Image (cartoon, rainbow, N blue to C red; front, side):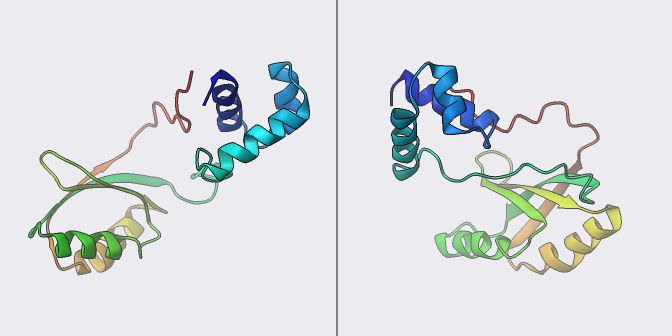
Amino acid sequence: MDTIDRSILLLLQKDGKITIKEIAERLNLTTTPIFERVKKLEREGYIKSYKAILDRKKVGFQLMAFCNITLNQHQKDFIKKFEKDIQRFPEVVECYHVAGMFDYLIKIYAEDMERYQDFLSNKLASLENISKVQSSFVMTEVKDFSYLPIS
């Protein structure tokens, strides 16, 4: 990957709807090599997908929470089961296996506190291997940086 590829990736991260023509103009190149480079970046997995980033509040998700989760058992089978089970919940938009005081960090969107309580009580609590859940609620989104700082 060279500096042109990095520039293409940065432009696409900032605006997924940017056209090949616009990228070519910004990089002072023709459209054909830009098109070929984008296709190569897609093929090689640098570009995983293209998505629209929604305003969560406008679509009804007023509450964002992060949950630190500790498991009872840490054997491979228990970890795999938790990771499979957490995929079922649409409220969980991100899940990370972390090192430190907790085993997992999950990010949750809910319409409101009542829906979050329902998720916690009826879905998350139904998982067998969880010993501790600690929730933190987002009061203000200070920085929501949705792209990688490629230079």
